[in-house]
Length: 357
Figure 1 (cartoon, rainbow, N blue to C red):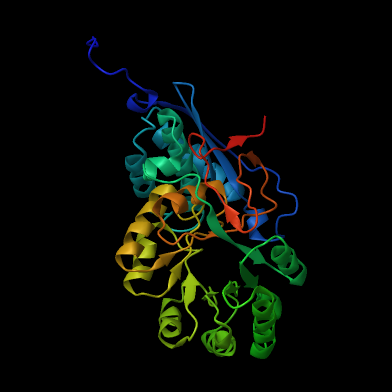
Figure 2 (cartoon, rainbow, N blue to C red; figure 1 turned 60 degrees about the vertical axis):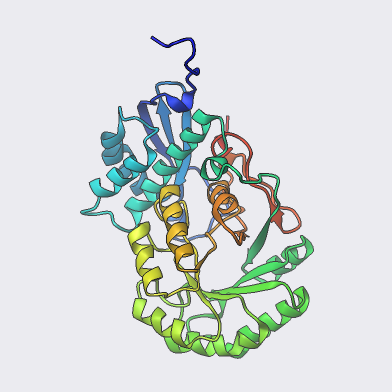
């Protein structure tokens, strides 16, 4: 029996038994005509016996849904949803024979984020404040806009962005370094000397091509060259890290803390770019921040303007920078608005998102 002097229990102090887990793949008109649609994003909802529902986003399309609704559902049904970190560890261990990278981890990411959303809702606090009680949720966080062509670049200029990332896979697998350098020169001239310019090669090149491009763009103060070669070519990245005059970024297609520990221990990237919806969720991203900061390596999460990564950026990042979100991913309410190159993290409980009514 509760003593009169005992503080009243809040939802955050009570166990939340998981009663149902469901995953769906929402329609995404305008999404890329590739694996990002074929194996598209999934929305995961974790229901509890206290009436709260956590909402997360993972990946893997129909395959990811199958993982969520079979092995992860069987593992988690009836468990206490408040034990987020231990449940994450169990999901990773339970799937380790076939899921240390890729689709299974993408599915785990969605469940982990739904559990963190529940934790915030139970405490009636935004996730950013759970991570850092002193976080300033009124702070305007700088953003950068990822653009795929000249029209998108011009729109980003006009919207007030002072940092732009140029996707350059349109130049092909064997690009003319001079043509890419000219694009960077025009962008630098348009933005001015103090703005940030980055490049994303989408893992299209080999080492020699990457170095030729890096040499060509180096005079224009490029902040980073992102994922120029395949993500598993670790020796190749070691060569680029040693020889490139432009900082190398990557990690968008890496998974779980063990994968990132290798990148960090070998210092293969100057900038790490985990995707919170793919890499293992917020539990993994927190560990990435911890390891990277201990090694003085910058973290700039993929799609940082979206609400899940943005909570961590606001709470944990000493040098915050949030990448523009996906214009075609509109299946949830509560995505923050970016204006004049800044964005604010949500002050609503959890991640501040909800499914459409």
